[in-house]
Structures are given as C-alpha cells and as structure tokens.
Image (cartoon, rainbow, N blue to C red; front, side, top):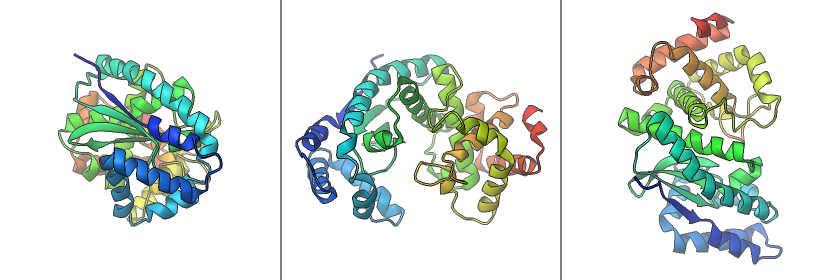
Length: 297
C-alpha cells in the first residue's frame, strides 16, 4: 500500500511572503487572499466558512491576530513545513502498525488564518489533516517530538471517526462528547508515537499543574457543561483556564483512562453519545468531589 499523500500548499505562499520586505497586515491579507483563492480555492473557502459558522469575521481576526507577526515567523514556518513533510510518512506508518489506520486520507500543509495547528476534517470528500503553519509557528512547535505528536493527535481524530463510521462533529458539539473525543485523540497520540506524549504542553510545568489542579478543572468544566456555556477556554491556545491552555485535553485524557476498563480502543471509539454523556458526567462528578480513586478502579 502506498503512503498517504501530503499536499504542500505552503511553499508558494511562503515565497510570496519572503518577497515582501516589510509588509503591513493589510498587504499580507491581500497576498494571502489572492494566493489561496486562486491556487487552493477549496482550502480558502473551508477556512472562511469555519469563521462564518462561528459568527466571526475572518478578516478582523487575521488582521488583528494572525498576520501582524507572520513575516517575523517566516523561518519557523519554513522549518516546520520541512519537518512535517518528513514526519508525515513516518508517523502514518506507525499509525498503521499500532492502531491499524488504513483510511484513504491525506495531509495539507498551508499558511492559514488561525483555524488551528492541526485540523482533522474532510477535504474534497476525503479524511484529511490540515496543518496550519501560522498557528504552529505561534505556538513554537518546531521540534520533532512536538510535530510528530501533533500529527499523531490528528490521526487519532481521523481513526476515531473511522471506527465510529460517522463524522465526529455531532459528538464534539456536546461538551461532554468533546471532552471524550479530545481525550481519545490524546490517548491515541501516545499509542502511535510509542510514549507518553503531550505535544501541546507549553512547558515542563504544565503537566504537574494539571495534575495538581485536576479537581478544579473538572469542577469548572462540568459547571460550564451543565449550564450549556462554552467550554472553548479548555481547548486551543487563544483561550485558557486560569491562564493555562489545553487543560481540556488533560482532563479528557484522564476521563478516557477511567473509561478504559476492559475496553479496546475501538470499543471506546464506538461508545454511543448517550452512554458517553452519562459516563463522562459521572466521572466529572467524582473528580470534582476529589474521588480520584475512580481512575484506578
């Protein structure tokens, strides 16, 4: 079986960016819009639709957050692009061996408008991972360990959807389902790379902090989920819980550890949403009450 293809939708734009000696955000936006609208129209539309669905103005976010530092991050984006191209084949080969990943999938490396360092989705009817160099550079994810963890995490999402036989979006629209989905992807990241892997940890103090504050994280998450409030601050890098990003990924991994009682990874992936909601809510109740023994039962 041939390898999973990787589409380089970044090289051309990075050359355009390098040709602009001291561009303003408005000039970068114009160059980005022209390059991707003409060269990769499906990729262009997909990102804009993602912002529209969230009720946000993509131009405003790009001009205020994404494009001002972009020229200064050029070398880091070029370095990450080169490493992703090499690591993609290596990590997908490990995913085949460890979790039996055999989908007809592809990767696209691009410079985007802030839709994520990694985005497991559908592209032209195929499961795909979109790697946004602008977010990767912002996060400083330039090492092999971080990038292979990122790839493995997104492959975990695609494997989850394949095992369920349906898109993950309906699951992820529920805050308890989102916690479960991100937790399983975090678990699969470690399985694929063959070690405990937290590619998104900003520093060495992140994991000890999350472990120490697990009760608070669980209480805050369940409180927001119960009140049907957004849980975005527990995921992603632009928002945070108590100033700490990605706490939802840690909490989700903890929940998956507790759910993984005599279940295979495939069985975990196929849990009905109704069962997920009941089980995850019960685990969060236990964690917020300080009953961490539930994780060892």
